[in-house]
Every structure is written in C-alpha cells, then in structure tokens.
Image (cartoon, rainbow, N blue to C red; front, side, top):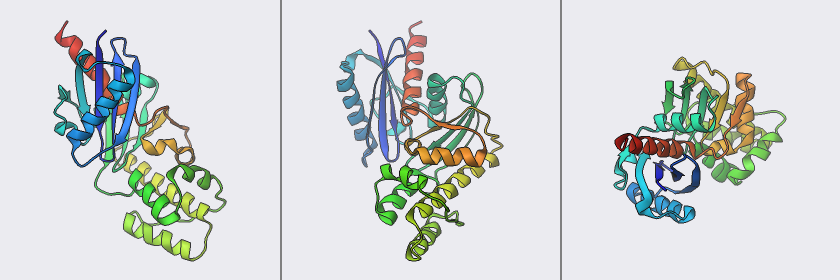
Length: 266
C-alpha cells in the first residue's frame, strides 16, 4: 500500500494528514507550531505516522503548505495554502463554493468553482483583527475564559455591544472600557464576534467575492458554533462549519502529493 502526506505548517499550529492510495484519510494530527518550522513539521509528521501505524518509507510523497512550507526539508514539494484549502475543501464537500477560513494569524475568504478551482480570494495576514489570535486575546486576557467557552457565552447575549474600531489595539481599548462599565460579558463577546465577522465579510466583498452558497467555515475558529451563526445572520445565508475544520489545507496537500506521485509513475 502506498501512502501520501500533507503537512500544513501554520503560524500557530502545524497539521498533518496521511491518506492511502484510495485517498482515504488515515489520520489527522495537530500540534502547536514552534519557532523552528522544520522541527514543527517533523514532529507533526512523526506523530501522524505513529497514529496511522504507517512506516515512513511507505509514504511515497509529501507536500507541505502554510507559512512554514518552504522551511520543511522533508517535503518533496510545497504548494500555497490557498490552493491547498481549495483542494481539501472540495474533496470533503464538492458542493462548497465559498470558504471562510479564520486561522491563528490570518483570515481568508475563497471562492471556488464547481471543480474546486480557486476563482477569487482575499486574505488578511498583516493585522491581528479578524484572526484566531484576537479571539485568544479576547478570551484569555480580557474576559478570563477559555476559548471553548466563548460560543456558549456569545449565545447568552441579549444586546451585543458595538465595537467600532477595525484595529485590534483600539478594539481592545473599547472592550476594556465596556468591562469597566460593568456591561454583560456575553454582550461584549457577541459584539466583538460581530465586529470581526463584519470585517472579514467586507474584506471578501472588496475582492468581488459574492458569497455564493454553499458557504463553509474552516480554521480553528470554526469550532465556535456561535461565530458561524453570526456569519449566517450577517450574510443572510447559511454558513456551515466543516468537520475537522483545521484539516483541510493539510488534506489538500496530501491529495496533491498523491496526484504528483501518480503522475510521475504513470
């Protein structure tokens, strides 16, 4: 049996997917990204091999993606993460036409055609606003809760606060001001979620993305059901979180690895 791997080395987490020659996913592993991107890639790949019970010599081709893709020495090749997201998402949901992805240090909106080819995309990777990192700041440092508690907290809101600033630093100041006014924490969390969602939606529209349905939600923040519901309300369209929402880029890279190997050995 031949196996293929995709390694997605992101700014905050590194992921690995191993598939077999039938394109069945055997495992998905995720770890925190370390300063050395090559070390991170090796660690998550080794974990995936152990989890899948696959010997390294049976992995015929490895493709890397993500911020650290060019640093990963074990890879046979690398591809941009936008392409990897498109390939992986189309495989798990061939009907998907729009992807909203919120990663640790960036956010992306991607429009696909019926074949999973990327038609348009827009990406924010220069500002923390609208990223998973900002949600972490919101939960841990400002609200004193765990990220996993954020969804339930937002759902308790009855009157979301208005967060007007598009800058993380100023948005933090607004949140601190609301906290000092003793406003309900649920309303502050919900207002922040709405502010971030609006920013990402506007970013996509600036790139002429029209949010064609079906719309899927990926990245670590997609585990937060309440944020998906906020996107749905603002767009007036259903936004559905993917199962294993952090796996799609690594899966896309693994599928491309299988394709590259088979082409070379046709």
